[in-house]
Amino acid sequence: MKSYSKFLLPLSLLFCCSIHAEENISNTIPTRNEVGAKAMTADIIPVHEAPFKMNKLTRPKFPDRQATISTSDISEEGKITPAINEIISELSKKGGGTVVVPAGNWKSGRITLKSNINLQLESGAIIEFSDNIDDYQPAVFTRHEGIEIMGAGAFIYANGAKNIALTGKGVIMGPPMDSPMRSLPNGNSVVENDVPYTMPVAERICDGYDGRTFYRPKAFSPINCKNVLVEGVTFERSVLWNVNPVYCENVIIRGITVNSVNVPSGDGIDISSCKNVLIEYSTLSCGDDCFTLKSGRCEDGLRVNKPTENVLIRYCLADEGHGGITCGSETAGGIKNVYLHDCVFNNTRTGFRFKTRRNRGGTTENILYENVRIIDMREAFTWDLLGTPEYMGELARRYPPLDITPLTPTVKNITIRNFIVESTDRLLSVNGIPEIPCANVLLENGNVKTNEIIRTLNDANGFTLRNMTIQATNNNIKIDDSCNVLFDNVTFYVPENALNMDMKGGKTANIIIKDNNNDEDVICKQGINKLK
Image (cartoon, rainbow, N blue to C red; front, side, top):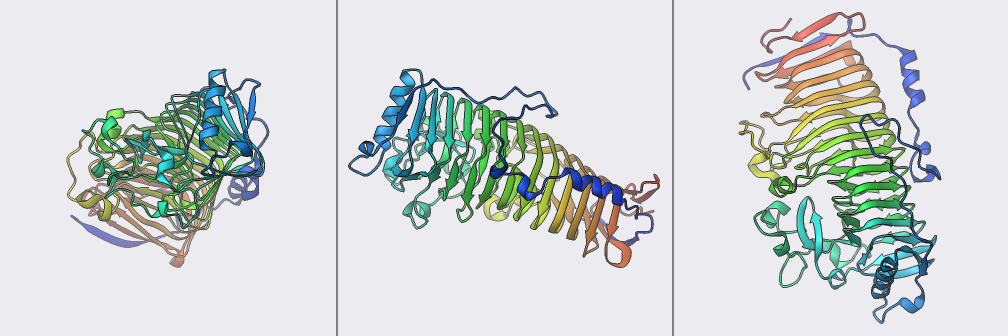
């Protein structure tokens, strides 16, 4: 680092507390019992408030035909797989309808939905999916962690279908927690190293036979589908991600419940390279990220080049997991036009998480989150753009900056406003990429209770905290090679009534604290050797 400075900034200019403003924020942000699956409305409220153009999303409609699974459909192996897939296929050929799974415990291998089919699980219905890799053959076209492969697909799978649904009050359940499938290795290393991007997709066979990798199936993962509905269903003890639409358009996910807390990589909802998505009134308790947006990984993701765009998430509850809402880390196709509002994040490691890597590519931009309550977590706001040497090797080393390539990711134009952080270990950390700093971030209108304020603010250009009250047990703020950082009308309640500003890096410049009287304290104007 080129230079270093550490000093105490008295807060006499910074106290501009507004009790009235705090009350206004509190009155607009939902509480835990006002969101999630238990609060779901019967009808879908029309989308008027999205800050981008979004198609009107309505439930797909199905012909008035119905077929019901019965005990006579159970095979000699004890599964309904052959019968239910035949019923779905035949009903689809007739123009579609509803396949009903009545109350009871049913066992199955992979189920494949076809066009114009609603798979409806009645209350009390449990479909327990097999841990035998033979029940997920032949290998089908799917995407594993952002890389196209031929693999298991999902417990419930579809490819190229239109107007499909998974509905009802029943349960999709993975195999027992001591199942051998859960101990199968997830490849030899990271998936981009295991599956060469130059290999034709048809040859990327990951079926588990003859020493080949078997990537565990997701719970529900349609690919290349239009007009998809998931409503009311509960997902229990998955073996990987739960709900993962890929390359889909017009997707509605509402009123679902996910319980996968003890499942490694047990993500809740992963939207992968989809367009026009509504997620509402869902409750996710996960072994990894809860609400997640992805768009492909590394060179293979650039080849496909399909963004995730036009996503609305509202009235949802993240009740446990790694991230409340996460963008990435698969970002190659880009993630844009995302609006989340009126949600509660409880007991997740982080609240708002931006995650990518130097080899992931793509641009994450035009993100708006507002009216969110954060309760009991490690960190409220996280930008994790480098990863760890364990998985990324030398790419995780911050310095020296690398050459900018098509695989260099960009994160910019992020607004998070109207939030309450009830309790967190630290408010935020930014671990950026020096060759392309994350840019144009606004955190606005927030009441915060935290231990630590800013663990690190690395490699950012344009980062604003505005109209906030921050109560902290630690007064440290660390800034490294970041510029154009503005604290605008931020009230701090910290030890010693002073901020311990720790700044370093030759690119650090224009660090400004401004109060509501328009007075400015220019902590760092041209570089950290030139302090006011």
